[in-house]
Amino acid sequence: MLINSSLDEVRKRENSFKVIHSILKKYGRKNFYDLTGLAGGFNLNPEDIDLLETYAGPAIFESQLQRAGKQHLGGEKILAFNRTTAGILATILALVKPGHEVIHYLPRKPSHPSIPRSTQLVGASYREFDDINDFKVQENTSLVIITGSTMDHDIINQDEFSCIITTSKSKNIPVFVDDASGARLRTVIYNQPKAMDMGADIVITSTDKLMDGPRAGLMSGKKEIIDLIKTRANQFGLEAQSSTVVSIIRAIQKFSGERMLEAVNKKHEVYEALKDDIVSVRETPTGIMIYADDLVQELRIKGIDTDFTSADVSCVFAALLLRNHHILTIPAVGMPGASTNLRIDLASHDAERIETDYIIKAIIETFSHLGEIVNYKSACELILYDDDLT
Image (tube, rainbow, N blue to C red; front, side):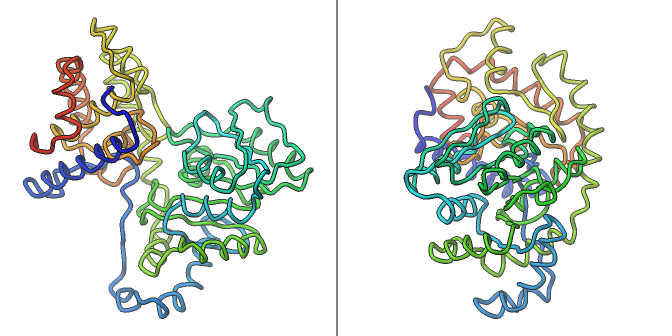
């Protein structure tokens, strides 16, 4: 194996940042293409700068946050976090008792690791499932979590969404929707209602996913529940600071969903051009994806076997794509536990200035390069961990 631990995942991520630094220094920002769909940013107005203080900022921005957050998510009260993961942790700390249970439905396993990890921290048990027939609450179920869109953009069926909420409500169990990217994918591309409008008690979204906000979490929910969560967030320093809060507000104000809708046509063009060379390529709501397992199978079709894991192979592919073509995907910079499936998101801001022909050529050439080195451990380790190759 090439990646054996969370420490290796961190090393890989740190090395990718060194590669990105080299690209930016040598070629400039215009020749670097972040197609993760997670680029985000701090798009502040000039008048915002003087208010980025510990107390003045919150005093001014809080009312704006409430208005903008309710516009985007619905609900009674809004709360901002330094990360979506922080919001998930604060919610579980506030609502789940030791010895009780969290159950989680998502369109396709596995869960984002922040959910089972947070559950473990409070001493509760955890069950996840992706078959609606398996859904069953128990006497000690403290919280039901629904994922609206998975890390790989699998979208929940609206009828299943409604069924889980109805069943949970009948047992007086609060429903928390992890709508990290789903708050936009579900509503803009699939015309589903907002989670709060479907009866959820709490919802959280990531303000850098398919919108131009910071890497942060925006939560909405019923006032009494949000107040409980806010108490926990403040106790553990999980709340967002002024610069993040105002950046969330500005991102919501600028968000339209138009770029996502334009990506639907662009992804078809890329998919059609790739499907003959890479038969397992799939379409996502706003781009294309190759599952890590399928990437290994693609190599076998070409007569290349490897002893490395599918995660190893996908991460090497992502590292090559970054080094040689300056295209960033999640496996190159993902946090420990993040998906290693290779996704190109054409709703990313940088997708507006990169030609589809360049993306197609880059993927085909990278696959060929991968086949040449995939059975040479030292070469793969250099690609993943040695920034001197930039």
